[in-house]
Amino acid sequence: MNDISITAVLFFVLIVGSTLVVTWWASRRTSSASDFYTAGGGLTGWQNGLAIAGDYLSAASFLGIAGSIALFGFDGFFFSIGYLVAYLVVLYIVAEPLRNLGKFTLADMITARFNTPKVRGTAALSTITIVLFYMIAQLVGAGALIQLLLGIDYWISVLLVGVMMTTYVLFGGMTATSWVQIIKAGLLMIGTLIISFLVLAKFDFNIFTMFKEMATVTEHGAAYLNPGLRYTNGLDTISMMIALVLGTAGLPHILMRFFTVKDAKTARSSVIWATWLVGIFYVLTIFLGFGAAAFVGTDAIVAANPAGNMAAPLLAEVLGGDILFSFVCAVAFATILAVVAGLVLSGASALSHDIYAEIVKKGNITEKEQVMAARIGSITISVISILLALGAQTLNVAFLVSLAFCIAASANLPVIIYTIYWKKFNSTGAITAMLTGLISALVLVALSPNVWNPVEGAAILVGEAIFPLGNPALVSVPLGFLGGYIGSLIGGKQSADEEKKFREVDVKANTGISVQDISH
Amino acid sequence: MAQVKHDIVDYDKIAAQQSFKDLVKRKKGFLWTITAIFLIAYMLLPILTSYTDLLHQEAFGGISWVWIYAAGLFIMTWSLCHLYVAKANSFDREAQAIIDEYVTNGGAR
Image (cartoon, rainbow over all chains, first blue to last red; front, side, top):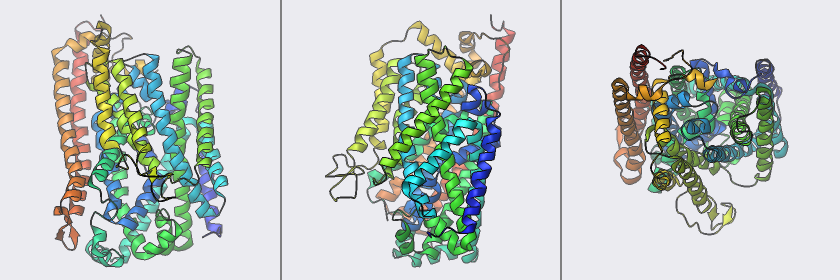
């Protein structure tokens, strides 16, 4: 695989080239802060839906889930289920109020009710933390993957991805990032459909034949088709499933996607598009995983990458030769680029809009300065994450994605729900909700088996884990809610002003009234 | 979406309208009931697979119940998405009626 074929180079050049053309086109339409952060709120429902799907179908989804299913059967499919049902939480609880109240960031929405620098700063801190963890995981994964695909050094791979993502964001802002997402989501769906079709053809287009054969082809026998191969601790499984379903509604780069449309109605339709696309994709992950287990074989998958990340590309090679392999690899590369670009943008919005423009400059900032700040923020976030990723090469960082989901579920979701729905919530509660969720998720992970393992090399540190669960959501999400509740009690009774503010938020969230006043 | 032309909106006045209170109450009732239902349906999956063997049994043709349950969750997600849109569209109409009522009764004041 280390020989780079002409076809592979061709596909890479085509994809990278077309995204650069998009960036150049987008750069000419990016002049205001609103253009930069939210593409001027001008995306249509299907465009934003595809872009949400693009944000969501990261390399972890595409390569990770296919590999997990290939190696662990049904247990790998847990991710697909969790990630999909999560959209219902987004749609029912978060999407429309967020669109109606916010401007560029999550902090905007919370400060629509509690306009203090402390609340905004805490929200920005939580966003930046999630973005950095998520990004390190993506960049380290990307580095390892490109190293594997193209046979170039890890540090060159990380730099390559880093330079590309910075280019998209810096010049094209949200418009470029969105269109890169849209292109990549389309290509990913096409690639996945082709592979799934070829896999099904091998099973005579009969699902029952497929299941019957899958019960015999792996070393696990019939157990492959039932849960229990990977997740044996009930509480751990439950905890992970909580993080998956509640985390999405708190992920900054997903939340940001609701500011790129003009109103709540469009936000709604974009979630429908995304849910269908992502749902179909996750159904297809079964064929990717099963196909890889049957036609590539567990041994070959593990030999290429112990976590199973190469299952989908290897399957493409077996089924469609060099051309399909190159295509899938190029799509995987585009996937990584698009997701990290979206992450940079959401990190930059917290840094430049929340912290610099709103807190440091107290909102006294010209349009031109805002765009400049956004660009500087993007570079800052990019450089920090590239440096962290270069330093984390040898660490096992696969758990960082689930940590990001866990922080999002524990620190962001409680404050979002309280802000929209709880009358007696106050600014003390907002701060304690975010800090309790954030700190408890971080501390519990630091004490978990993901960080501590008695066997040297199995985790980051050697020793017994104090906290038994790999994913702390089961404990940290309730703590986030509890923190917000207790904080609100300590904060005491609301002033007449705060009560008035809640009525305003309630009216705006529920009617969408004057959304144009707060978005421009 | 609901829109008014005034720069200043008297939110207290809208919040005090009976029509607004009714809408919020019914909307919250709908959203949280459905949310509770799908979260329970969803969490039952890992609970059942971790602590019972119910879903490990074969349903038909070599496929065990866990796949059927998972397929059910997919179908549930898509169906509830469309239920939401239908409901939200009717809430939109009510929201517009509330704004109209506000404007008729003196608007921005």
